[in-house]
Length: 366
Image (cartoon, rainbow, N blue to C red):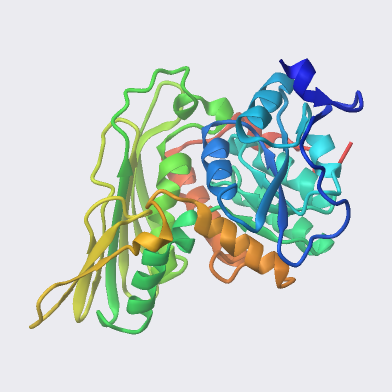
């Protein structure tokens, strides 16, 4: 079937026959052309949301596995499939590349695309550590390319509403933030969440959400105290940390791959409290409590799409790219670096280190 559907040069690329080819050249005023780098579950979920946007066009996908790229292209009707990352990075018909590899490969994959002149949306956690993150940010700024961490929580309309209420002083001065994210598992040692070679453990995969939520509201902590339970492989099965801020506020964050938590969050201020009872990073509602007043419930607008949609981060990327911006005010690069510093500090305290952290992934096209 692939032989019938694909045609093209023998350079690892394939074009679907019968599909009108896109116009080569600069991005049009209305359409932003995307490339997808990786073919796993999160890449599929993002692509499904992306193709529903009328002003987005997915023109290519790449994987280290040629067969995987072909299958993904067929699934989503993508015109071009590549069996290597370099070909995608060099494809001048692509405006933005969405990087959805395991996070141990984020630096190499995103760096390859930035150096080749592509804008990049890179999945969370942004990189394995802050050193890699700083190098990607420097590379994006050197080449004048747009770069953003795919922290979809920051782009969620209801989370943005919550932040606006906090920033407006509705609950007074913030005293504490609490957030948790845990999965019940159990995950075998071979699973990516337990594999040190893939940056496994609860903190980078799940804990990035509670940490990012706390820092969205309070900025970067001045002090961190962390504890963890480690697996035999040396990754964290569950981690808890107290974040201290110069304002006097405290953040309490927890993540786990050995117990399903409520994935709830709470922001307490001097004049009230906001609770997200479940799914704080993609909420369908939150409740505002203020002294002497009835509780107020804020719910997601059905027009914004399903609560697990990643369309809002895609829309923000396209808005920024069209405007000629090199980073998003919703997910600023300095904020991403601050979160990576916190994650590094927590890992340093609990004793988690990954083999790839000593490597030097390639940042320029071959």
